[in-house]
Structure formats: C-alpha cells, structure tokens
Amino acid sequence: MHRLIEKGLMFGNLIRVDSSVLVERYNRALKSLTGKQTKLDEFHVDISGYSPEVGAEFDDELYLNHRGVNRQFILLTTEQSTAPLLNAKFSTSRGILKQFIETNRAQLFALTARDAVVGELVNSVYSVENPAKLFDIRKITIEADTTSGTVATAKKLGSMIDRFKSEDGAWFDDVLIGQMIGLAKETGDVTRNPVSLKQMEFAQDNFWTSHFGGLYVFRGVEHPAVIGSKDHDALVDLPVKFVFDLTERSAIAKFLKLNDMVEPIVEARGLDAAAILHQKMDFVVASVAAQMGEDLVGAVRRDLRNLGRRYAEKLLEAWQGMAALARWAEEDGPWPRITSDHDAYFYTLRAKDHADADLVNMLLAELCPLDIRQLFICHKEAFYAAYATWPDQKRAYVVDFLDREYQVDKAGTREALFGHDAPLEEPKPVRRDMIEAVGPWGAVRRR
Image (cartoon, rainbow, N blue to C red; front, side, top):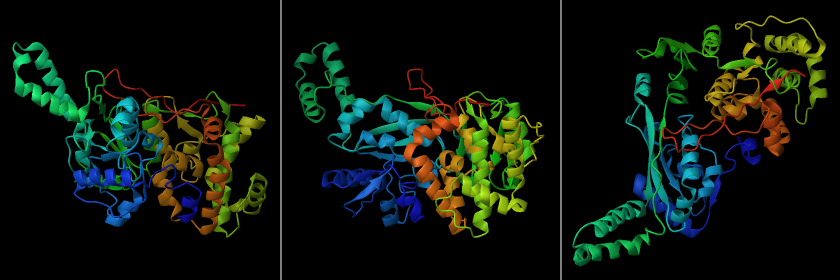
C-alpha cells in the first residue's frame, strides 16, 4: 500500500497532531473514552479523531469504535470536518460527523480552543452478533462534551440562572449565588456566550455496513431488500422479503429498477456519455494487459488502444458491451441489447439524483470492480481490498492514473463524471432545522 500512501490516495487529508498541548488534550480525551493513553508525540487523526498510528500502537483498529457499532469521537479542531473516516463500519457515519461539526462549528471552535470535545454516535444496539440486529438500529443521536464537562456545566449554570431570575427570595440565597459564581469561573458568561451543542438525531434507513462481509440495507424504499457481498445463505431471519448477494445480478437489477434508483448514462442529461464509456473500457484493457505482464506506468489512451488490439481476443464481455454502446452513442450504430445478465450492464448505469444516490453508486462500484476510478471515489473499502489482490503492474497503473487524472483536479474530475461538483449525499437529520446536503450525481447527456 506504500504507493497509495505516498500519493495521498490512502490516509490522505488526515489532520496532523504534533504539538504537546494537542497531544495532552488527545490523551485526556482518550483516557476518558477508553482508559488508555498514547506514548506517541506525533500522529494523525481522521474526522472522528481515530489515528492509524495510535491504532497500530494499541494493536486495535477499533479503539474508538468498540464492536464496530457505537462510534466514539475526539475533536481537537473543527478542521477535522474535511478529513476522511477510516475503518468505516457504516456508510452514514462520516456524513453524520461532518454535519454535527458544521452545524455546531462556532461552538466547537470555542470549546476546542481550550479542551478536546469527546462524544459518541449513539444507538440502542451495542453489538451486532447476527445480521437481524442491524434492523434494530433505527436512529443515531450524538452525545458530546469536553473532557472537563463544560457543556454539561454550562447547562447546569443556565438552570441556576433561571432559578435565580424566577424564584422568590433567590437574591438572598447565598448558597445558590455561590454555586453560580463557582460554575461561572469554569464556563464564562453563558448569558452572553452560550456554551451549548445542538442536539441532533439521524434516521438510519438505508445504509452500507462492513459487518458480515459487507451488507447494503435498503429498508426505507418501496421495495425493501438486503444485498450482501457474500453468499446470502448466511443472511437468515431478516425482516425483509428480498435478500440477494452480488452474484444475483438480475435480481439486483430488478430491485434497482422497481425502486427507480438508476438510469443509463447514455440517456441521462449532462456531459458526454461516450467519453465515460471509453474511459471504463480503458480500465478493462489495463486490467487484461497487467495480467499479461505489460508495463502500464504512464500509459495513456493511445497506449491502451494499442494494447487493446494486441489482446483483443482476451478482452472481457464487459468491454465488448461498452464498445457497442459507445458506437451507438458516437456513430449511430445499432442499439446493443445489454440485459442485466450481461457483464457490461452495471457499467452503463449510474444512480439517479435522489437521497440515496451515494449508496446506490457505492453498490454499482462494487458490481463494476474494473472501473477503478468509480471504485476509488465511491467505495474506498472495496478499492483497498481489491488493490491488495492486483498484480504489481496494475497497482502501478492505477496509482499513476488516479494521481495524474484525479488527484490533481478532484473537482474537475467529478464535474466531468457527474455533471456538477456536489458532495456525496449526507444522512439527513430528523429535525427540520438540521443541514440538508445535496447528492453528488449530476446528469450525463448523450453528445
């Protein structure tokens, strides 16, 4: 994985913690959450405060995510909102944390100026010993405070101030006044500078989880289903009628169609669908050429075209189907019949612009593993797992391509692929005053 790390394609955008003050605050927070402390004086953290270096030190990747269910977090700075979430067990977790930080940015900025903020993404389930337990997770709430309890103290002081203002004789209550003065020394003037964090809760209807080999849970749709990355025979006693695994392509295609979740890229409005198909075809050629031992570092489309001619008889059915569709889009060729059992089928789709677009595109990425760009953007866990199995030639090509074509201009690449540079759809808070984010997938039109 060293190539990915060197190019910032793995552990990228983490927040560096290298000052003694921040390390001390992190240790205080770590002690309050886990009972442990790090001996490191320099490390990096993700949006939740998880550090891969500390995880290696503890030999525990889940030291802030016990049993992978209730994610704890440590905030040292509001800049963590731009960092990724490592070892994500649920697809919704990063979006929830990001919205919590953005909604409470001013308050968190003030609190983290003096202390670390610790908290937890809380639900009523403490372990998921079987897949059915996932359906007990109905909503996620966020609990947070500083390690010294500033928010709780401020709330207590606020209640005392209300008593002082409303109760008869409170002006002569020396005990109450003394308590107020003592708390005010810890919190400051809460009447002018309120110290509070907005209470937030999020519905957990449709999501992906890494538990049980990877599951897509769709229960907030008209036709609910669970889709597993592995054999679905292990998925028993689930409160949904339909359970599939990734090999049941026709069933998945029908599920997506019934719920109106996808559209063919050649029929969508937006940018040049043929150009997107050609890029996907290049990825297929690169995969075949890498297996044949070809050196692909720095390979451009002309090089891949030559390699495609050399190994034409080895090109996969997915390449043939996308080529036929590209001929239709560019040259008015005959309309190819690509059914759901064709290897090219899912490569020709993208999520419609709806609340679960990111989740659907995550599923499509796993169904189209040769499209290394979509796999990297939409499903990094699957990307890293696949990367570990590739021959070295393909690893070198993929890292070079992502660094050359994606890293240097992420916004432009997303614009070219999806029609607009919008962030992935974030989980929507239950309450109306919470931030609502926009899905990422713009329209793609036929040229």
